[in-house]
Amino acid sequence: MSMHTRRLPSPAAPSAADGAPGPGAELRFPAGFGWGAATSAYQIEGAAKEDGRGESVWDTFSRTPGRTRNGDTGDVAADHYHRWADDLDLMRDLGLGSYRFSISWPRIQADGTGAPNQRGLDFYRRLVDGLHERGISPMATLFHWDLPQALQDTGGWENRDTAYRFAEYAEVLFRHLGDRVPVWLTINEPKTVVQNGYLEGHHAPGFQDPQAAYLVAHHLQLAHGLAVRALRATGAGRIGPALNLHPCYPADDSAEAARAARLHDGYENRLYLDSILKGSYPADVLADLGPDSRMARGIADGDLEIVASPIDLLAVQYYTPYYVDGEGGTVSRWPTSQADWQQIYPDGMYDILTRVTRDYGPVPLTVTENGLPQADVLAADGTVDDAGRISFLRDHMAAAHRAVGDGVPLESYHVWSLLDNFEWAEGYEQRWGLVYVDYPTQRRVLKRSAHWYREVIRANGL
Ligand code: IFM
Image 1: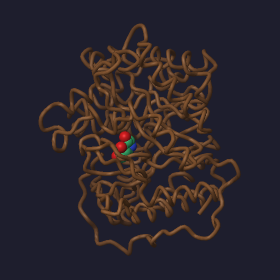
Image 2 (image 1 turned 90 degrees about the horizontal axis):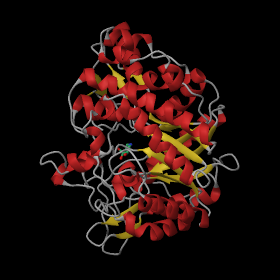
Image 3 (image 1 turned 180 degrees about the horizontal axis):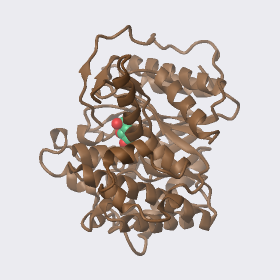
Image 4 (image 1 turned 90 degrees about the vertical axis):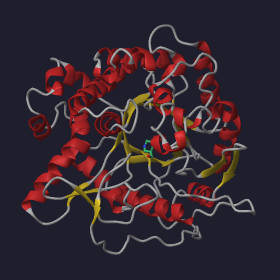
């Protein structure tokens, strides 16, 4: 992700105390609350050419000179494809109740269509079986950006047909793994594909084409709905979308800023939420795009009924708020993490969770990503002291706890990420994990935050 912002004079940062675990939980979560961590296939698996895996758009993009920091690729990543059993042991030792991972479409269908690759299916079968053996509940994302390159070659998400190929791929997975995966997430952060992949161009496929971008948005939403329907046909588990949502606040008291923040919210949040939960795209966004936009022309009769197929849960990913000025630009108000687009504002977690419940009703929620990057260092004594991550997580969990107290049906929370990994265009420089990965040796080291999180899980609270 990225955001080009100018900086406002900032009030004091929200609390960020040192984060040592307190004696016993003062903020206890409801019994049965799920504590987890999240990853995605391209970011951790590596083994890019093994066992019949095809090429994805991220293989193409990251191998193109100049596209990623230091020319980094996911070819090896955290080598999870080979180290999955040890990684599952780590998860068990942390006490995780839930593990959210994604399935690599090109491992299942090298070219995005046709008969599935048995070796790809076997890998994920071993993974989910291994999770169950360790008492961890699998939560599988069907698509976390690694579109088979062969489908990109026929138009990618600009091609309506890709949505139907996605539904076929999803059905393969429901039939092969549906008995072992209780929760499925359809498309990870469609907005990031739209904005980073097609507007700003710093993610695969690397385009800067606003007309294409919003047609892609519609096709991603359609693909989501078709996958929900495919799941109903196979009767396998619960399903929902994974949306990165951002509270959008006016940057000042002017009517212009209020209006601009509202439209910004339309593009950031309502485009995805309204279509799935209300069966319509927001009128202000459609008007802003214009009646002749490729998106408007690409919406066929009946599409929105498909997009709005009833879901079982909504996965919310929260990282940063936006402050919008009267010209529609974004400004920065809070200190940022190592990622310059991320302002650290825990109250935004409360605001977005309560807003979803207020505006869309009591759909069960799960937080499937929340975290921050740091330049973590492995010390000579073998420890990684990431106190800043502990403060961040504790403040955001406290905000989520407050939302639960105010009636938000939040059932689980997942830290992004379990492991340090390939952070897309940023390569390996940003470390997002609870677990440090020493890339030259692939040794895993629990950071201080991982030890802290284990206590949170044990106490079911903070
Ligand atoms: O690493 C990403 C992840 O793939 C999707 N959500 C945001 C994370 C941090 O940028």
